[in-house]
Image (cartoon, rainbow, N blue to C red; front, side):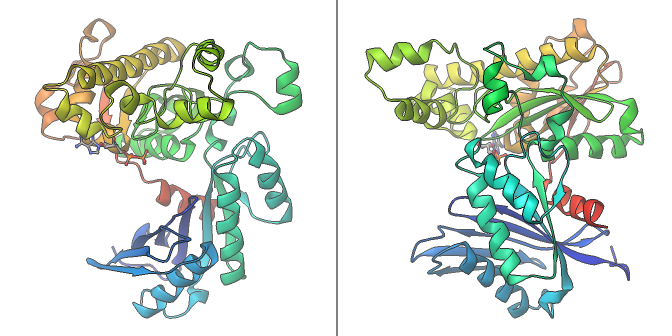
Amino acid sequence: MSLNETSQKIIAINAGSSSLKFQLFSMPDEVSLCQGLVERIGLADAIFTMKFNGQKVSKTISIANHQQAVDMLLTSLIEYRIVADLKEIQGVGHRVAHGGEYFPDSAIINDDTIEKITRLSDLAPLHNPVNLTGIHAFKQALPDAKAVAVFDTSFHQTMAKPDYIYPIPYEYYRKHGIRRYGFHGTSHKYVANHYAEMIGKPIADLNLITCHLGNGSSICAIKGGESVHTSMGFTPLAGVMMGTRCGDIDPSILPFLAEKESLTLSQLNEMMNSRSGFLGVSELSHDCRDIQQASKTNQQAKLALDMFVERVRAYVGQYLVKLGRVDAILFTGGIGENSTDIRESVCCSLEPLGIFVDVNKNRSKSTIFSTQESSISLAVIETNEELMIAKDVMRVSL
Ligand code: ADP
């Protein structure tokens, strides 16, 4: 695709506690010019990797903080002639974990936005502060570029109150904002819109169930392009079982374990977030590929796999009821895009509901893998959160 004359360079940023992922696009052409990752920020042997024009560069170098990581990435863009001048980068889109009820959409970053993201750090202590670090680092390096925050939660702000209030004393919602927020919104939105474009129908006419299955997994019910329910909740711990996260469990297990095992709140939190899911049940690995391989001979790995599939199916069932009419079930994320077996297991035996899997199409990695007779289409859509972020920078800041 040739870059048109009015094209702009927009960079999408995903800052983690010790990492920074980036992708530079030419927009609106949606051409990816380069992408990369800085890992192990804060250490003497941090790793910088960048791919562009079919080339890959990788360096091990000391990077003390996010500001240095940003400076390094910008210097590399010049060094490898991806841009001639940093002023060519006209927009920066930052992935931000939590937008609370303040942000039903992506937002231009100004003092008010920063103040609200800071206030929301209470709800996302591991993510919002590092997202802010990325925002400040780019503000310093590219003061003239338009900066936009794209929140994981925004897409789900269309949920109705009965779907986002928890049945605990209402005062906790009032006082602390305890409610379902949902996450992975950028991915669910991208996948739903991409599918609509692909089949040439307006998103407003479609009811979809999107299954983002990766290390973190969530399912979303989307009516006419709006999220009406999603499996993650107050935090990304809720919903289906994941790589190391437990998903939904009986909350009474926590006080019980606190007493029996003398566990503190932070130990319980660590158990649910880092020692559960595939890892906790299999006692082998958090990685789905390892679990699939081990399940051929190891009963606990097979149990973990069966539990994952059943939990995904339970949400699909719930959302079939919620939406009434469903046009398609879409699979994305590392597991959703790559595991033919899990897609097949999730969608099998649903013929009474009008869902028919074409096993050959599924195994041959065809995008649509339902049969002609299926009244609900089944499709694999590769997610692209970075492109969605770049698109939002264009939409919000123009
Ligand atoms: P994250 O949530 O961190 O973005 P990804 O979406 O990259 O994670 O998904 C990672 C998961 O995808 C891992 O559990 C990995 O094992 C799984 N995965 C990747 N390829 C395959 C495959 N071919 N078959 C099964 N699982 C796969």
